[in-house]
Length: 402
Image 1: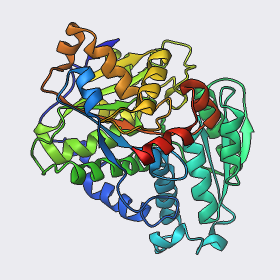
Image 2 (image 1 turned 90 degrees about the horizontal axis):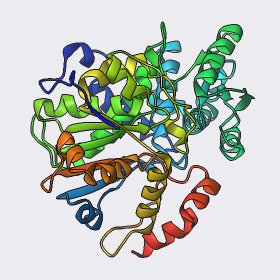
Image 3 (image 1 turned 90 degrees about the vertical axis):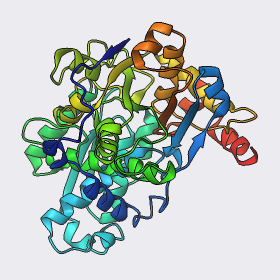
């Protein structure tokens, strides 16, 4: 399903949004994140895939590959850690930001506990950052989170709390436990009275856009090489973080943004229909685990309501086929390890280009230049192998020899 957002704006980046998230703060976040040993201190790859572009009948199809951002395996390494760092700096003014994750202040932080709900990647990133800073971490997992993802989080020293229900239930439980124990929630979704930290999380994702500006040769206030940018849905954080940066930087020449989410977790599409943060209409359960969110973040929606041109849903099997396509590669397309939530841009493009009506609605034609963000690698190795028919290591070996 594809809808056009009639509230989307294409003028200058609004001042009220700039006061919340801006290029300057994103660049500061990037400088600090590059000091952490779990983050690569350079840009992630930007690949052109000419064979896929030819199949889709567009001029260019590119992938910004976040799978190699960090040993943590996903873009979430940019969000929770910077939010934790900024929270620590507010509690202890004067600390050296570059030294927090080296453990220099562990004695000051050891009595502090942070907590969050997660589908996997956000909690893993928070656990790793808390371990390196020296504070305690509690992660709430809902029933659909696999044991494999739980082990990946607990491996960083976090205490795991399991609940029944879905992601939104785990968010509520994390807030309850924090209130009862005096802990600090570090979440990527906002709710009433809780916006500062989710804003920090989203601002961390601006690192992706900051790198893209340099890699793609985008000049301030000018059109860049991309006419369309596909962004993941979820609660809306990564879409807000990237779209806000490019909108501020390019102004009225920003690309067309399309947000994609699972059909059964369509909270952002429903928000666009209703004109306010809304809940999903489906079961929420999806193979796209990182996007299996039932309720939009009100803070993220402040940005998406004006920045996103289209909202779209896809089916699980469409995501799986996109994983296989990127893994296979071709003579001219490098093989890429892309997880279930990482491939939604390609999956959505394949749907749109099969329909002249949908392509027209999205403004796609043979002259279009399209960018997708591969937000994760094989964060659950067994799931990746089951869905693609080969291991991530096999794909990486072919990538290395491509």
